[in-house]
Length: 266
Length: 309
Image (cartoon, rainbow over all chains, first blue to last red):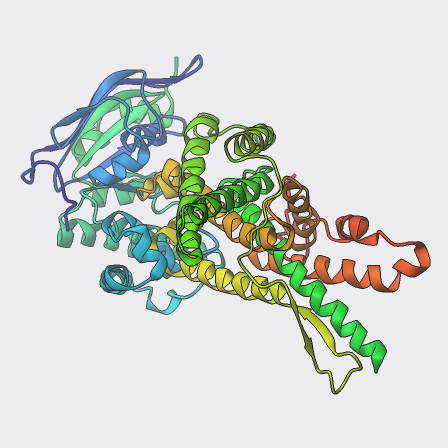
């Protein structure tokens, strides 16, 4: 699964790089001078205590926030002010910390909405619902059914998502992001609020997405066990500053990280 | 039997007149759902669509084109005018005001109302233009059962049929197409919609376009009934009580609300009119809306708003 457009990037090469990015809201610095990269095919974790700037970082990558300083290069193209739907067009998909599904719609329609960019029939055919538009709907419905099978949510297809339990909502949200066939998948606390069994399921899905589809994943997560098991490399933020970057083992033993999490006597 | 026949006649004409209120209310609901904007300009858009249609039609007829050809040219021209309006409103009014308070956007649409009303009359003229699209005579039904039969005017029946086709078409469009899904997605969650690649600018253009086309449909029926004239914009204000009764966010609510207002005011006029002195049609809808506000503020079909404290 890969999005169209842009140069092909080999596994292990830099897919996205963040260089000296700073973002502040009024006088509050959310992110200061942070640099790191995400390589194609890896699972990259972004961790840090509450208020470290993790979600801000994700919002910068997919265009919700525009940093005041710094550069972001995705697939070799450096951008200044990219808007979220343009990021999506470039192959960046995401999920949200507090599930952001289309509540009035069924699970199926939510995931179909993820296909929006892949569908090209013009408005006129869509209105008549004939010819190319109908063919397209059927074709994309097949792809969506594959995702539904993959996530094992066949039985809730027709259920309005507002009625689903939290764990399943998170899964539908992942499905919607997968439907975009992204090159880079951003997951904002995919396991927050889940019980152990749900966490294990979700971890398996993330690994499978990465293995089978070769999708590059960047995730924010608080559960250190999950982070250590899943990720190839970890970047640690604290108060908007990068304090460590490396493999899970390196990060785990880094004194600055331990201090940030446990507090340090001054 | 005469009394019942008369009741049926009043009820049917009321329901069919109500369909027209529903048509305008539908335009309001579409925009409100997708963008949270209460579009005060919907009535002005009916006027604009009607004027564009009738003036292009008259011009073509004057140039010797057959009537049906002129109708097609008129409809295409009016549709083009409505798309241009949708584009201009999105580009120069709502686009720059994105993320502003609902009241700010509402005030902006009041401004848009004056611009459309003034612009439309400046470009297309400010007289009363007859629009003979549909037959305006009447049928007399069940003459055997009821003395004198039941009078049903043909234009009302046309209006009802057109509205039914429009509603079914819109329902299919919203439920089964990519753009319809995108519209519902934006209505539910702006950020999530953007994250799957839906452009808000594009969607807002589409909603205004759809509302403009709904206004055009309403204009064909109202224009035939009353002639295309400025007072159409006042009739469009009747959509407000319809929305309050039906609920601002509900398409079925707009339809049922329209029917209730249409039938209610005609029945009130016929049966209460003689005893309290007529003219009930003009205020009945508003009193009904007030009663609904007291009993069920979210409207019959609206979502109940529960605020967390």
